[in-house]
Image (cartoon, rainbow, N blue to C red; front, side, top):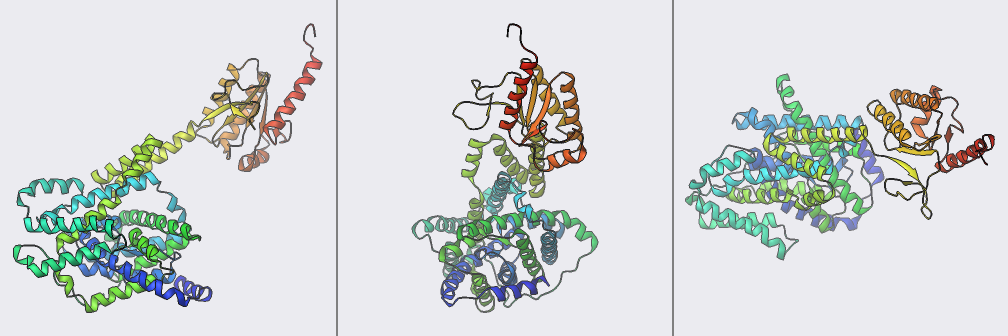
Length: 568
């Protein structure tokens, strides 16, 4: 029903302009030139034949073109997502190619269904759940794992291991068995991939490199020298079928499917939002959840694997000047044509060349500049980023991410438990109040303590608030009143409410008046409903700090008149 509604909505609101056709066709051909070799290469991450990578580009792209909200986003195989799928299903497949495809289809449909459900329950806020340091650390770990995982393809030895440490150990064990013709071809392809964009940045470098390597393999007969080739690619399109799964399979894959759903969605949303902002429109995260979910279901029923937003191909689309999602339709049709008419030449694609493409993709995921910025701005965030990377490399993708997220949440709780606070005063020429810890020369009124607590007052920090405020009162010189600047106290629970009552009673017993300023929102509403502190109006609650200070001055003057000092 969502798909039908979306189609009707798009038809009713969208009118394709004739002048968009040419740029969309050019962008579609350019994206296809990048999509075809990368899709084949990313299928290799999981251990699939070439056609499976191409299958993942047809139905998912057509579905997203119909229901997606981004005009520029290209969906398809993604290196990071493919690595997560490989980690989830390779151990369960036990070397059986058919079971590997079967499990991949199940995971794709599970990710699709979870995404659709998340969209309907409005869980699009998850796009902001992975902080940038965690996402950078995760991508850095995936990138390093990809680099290590392609060493066997580039050096020409067989290795069934996966992961960063296992890949390095396999290289050390097999270094003496390096196949020199394979290494020469792989290294040459890698050089083309690195050097060609410096001279011709708009060239589809991955396609050019694969074509050159394939021509070299066919022209020189490199297969006779032991260079491994891709081999025959079956002609035709995938048969659509719904994967069958039993309960134990679904249960064993659920955790991985949830993790893949979150990471692939967040990655896609980062790309979609970046390009939407560049072109002056907005993206509905909940809608995108559903659109990507439908695209993943399409991948699952067409014998493919989980797809996500592809930042490199989206960048190519934007660079060439694609206007609408017609670009995705063009890409899908080009790939259909390749599978039907040009499947023969794919047999000459060298495995080493695909490994070189994947190595460059892995290197592109590593963001040293961001890591340097994290180190300069926040050592904790930098450590969180590095910990995520180490976790991905050492214990796996999902456990590494979950550990980093748990640490980030614990730090958030700690900052809320022991937030910053300040005693306030004012300086001539400075608007508003200043913190005495930063401006010791600031002016204060004798007997008045103006205090700010920079967090909601909740059960786990209420006792800390009480201790801090009473300690400051004890340190003050003959305190007569405390004015709590509550502008940052945006929320309040029942424990916090009880604590405020206790603080007020304690201060009254010491002859110190207790009042609020700038108390708004849920905290004010709870205090008003409770009646704990009496009627909420001046002199208890003031609209601003300045109003509270003025009231204190008037009260102080009246007190001085009633109780004149000796000799006054």
